[in-house]
Amino acid sequence: EAFRLTGTAALITGASSGIGAATARRLASQGAAVALVARRTGRLEALAGDITRLGGHALVVTADVADEDQVRRAVERTVERFGRLDIAVANAGVMLLGPLDGADTAEWRRMIELNTLGTMYTARAAVPHLRAAAGTGPRHVADLVLMSSTAGRQVRETNGVYSAGKHAVGAFGEALRRELTAEHIRTALLEPGAVDTELPWHNRPEVQEAMRERFARMRRLHADDVARTVEYIVTRPRHVAVNELLVRPTEQQ
Ligand code: NDP
Image 1 (cartoon, rainbow, N blue to C red):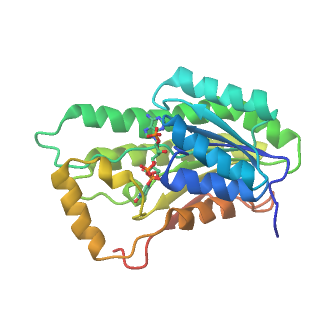
Image 2 (cartoon, rainbow, N blue to C red):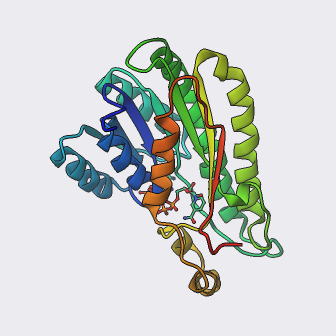
């Protein structure tokens, strides 16, 4: 069944590449108007062009999700433009790996400020609008999708801070779920395994090398494999809430 999101508006953070870009395409293909949020404006504009050519509606919002004011303004601009916000996908993230001993603590701050606090800011800014959307409009339900990771459940050597930040997203999301579900705001935690995106390639060269070896032993997920799970979560009937979804490549242990 096509166009299950007609009349809705969705905001996706980290929409300039990888999972976020694929998710924006998927939600737009179901008829949602999409707000594309990230720092690289050129990439967002190219994606918005694709979506528009296919008959969709897209808004480019350049913002640093680690900055609370910028997140709040991004949400406000989305609601000004589309009149509503039915779906928020808090996806922007970085993954900087390495042993804790001797670590560069600037990398810790980047991860916690974006992956954890940025996700919290996104939820904080979106919820009043999600509440309004759940009360009116085509679906009478709203969705908040939080991007965690297998690292939000499984700790490995060299991913201590990334993993801690994603565990925190899980705890935050469960509290929000309990607070909001009676209002028909569904909170979903999505935990992908290894996905073929730009994410690993922001690491130091020696970490990249280790990742290349690990990936050589498995066929990773495509960004669109994860985008389809977001599409699934937000297109369930009003009485069905997917609270948590863990999706690994078949070959990942
Ligand atoms: P990418 O690196 O391809 O995408 C990350 C996105 O986040 C980009 O759009 C980037 O845009 C955006 N971003 C980074 N920093 C900021 C910032 N300060 N403000 C706003 N946006 C920012 O990686 P993925 O698509 O893989 O990652 C998306 C999410 O999925 C992350 O939360 C990641 O932790 C999670 N994940 C990924 C997995 C994987 O194996 N790839 C596995 C499990 C979870 P820009 O640079 O333009 O700002």
